[in-house]
Image (cartoon, rainbow, N blue to C red; front, top):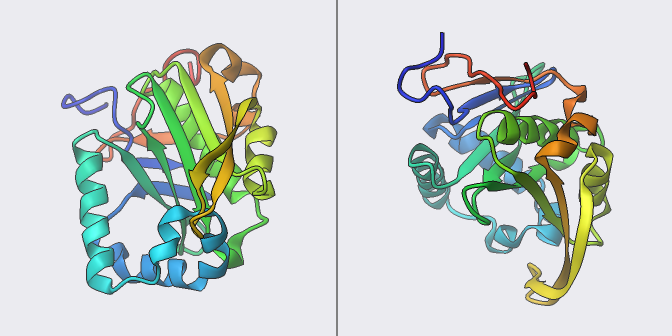
Length: 218
């Protein structure tokens, strides 16, 4: 039985065959700090937020509290990625509302010693199912630097379509303008995509299962 508080979500926990995606908690402070610090050379290449790293633990905790606050207020949905087998925190992802209520943008990062295992693709596929099947949006986007071949591969693998490459659109962590690729998938395309190749379960804030709609899990 789903929660009567909000039977349509949001999904506070998303479970895939190998991963658990969940909203941030205070206890994530040290594992998150270690995951970020261990991956800074790679993160600084692509993630704008990484230019200010490493940060003090007090700053990291402030981020956790603010991220959870935005999640609870339906302003933005940031998830931490936990590896099921080890229980280790291995990255972050999110369903961002930057482009409006009927759309979501997925971002992701995986710590350096856990890359090349398909974890980013698994997380993005799961959140695409959640976006269409629970949030019931019309489209999902992935934005990435054309030089970030790992991120490009995730979008292409899952069946997202390249809509455009916006030239000199966004600052890099080094402060240099860079191009941005816009990949998207719209609701009618979901059934033909590889996003449905994995099983996904989603749970609300009370850890009750959430129903999927729009033909995703029916």
